Image 1 (cartoon, rainbow, N blue to C red):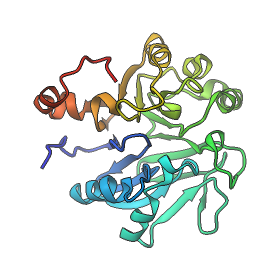
Image 2: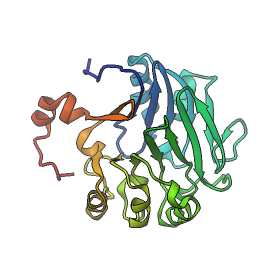
Image 3: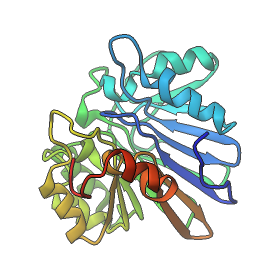
Image 4: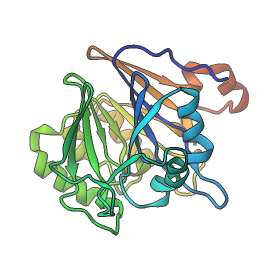
Length: 266
């Protein structure tokens, strides 16, 4: 079994390695909330192949699934997850029966964490990139910004709405590092320390764009992506963060043995 970081007090963020898609586990103790469910393929999906086995191996009790938007690289694993946990609550901005709301102004408390929905303004059944549910998660000292696949249009509106309140220590890079997103305006207002991108190695869209990676680095972010690092984990306790990439920090010999590529190769 692959070695994982030890559980510690506080909370934890795990960006799972689901290829081209997104799935982030936020956990406290043995309870977890899932933001997006990864992609669906022809005969399989990330829920069955990656997410459910990972949660079971970690002995985590899944409390809720939040869907950022409708696209299959973000919602494709939902049915497999629902099969495993039929009574699971689902939150989205998709205006679907049975879903809890995920629109601006929605907020809730889960143990030590406060969730605030910043975007979209209203629910939309279309569930396109700019309809994605953007959420800030914080413990009063460290803040995570979940952005789904928002693009420049939504980013500008979000900055206008939030003004000086958009700061976050950790940001999930919008739209897998596409050139359509991560405007300089957004990054200046986030003023964060860590940028995490979920992206497949050698993907057809050539994400993340080099210009986007450079933009984050120029703004002082520590950039990490799943194409290079595999699963990315952040342990947070008393205002301090520890970042770990599966290939660099947890299984470095495996990484060098099987890939043996330069850091910038994708």
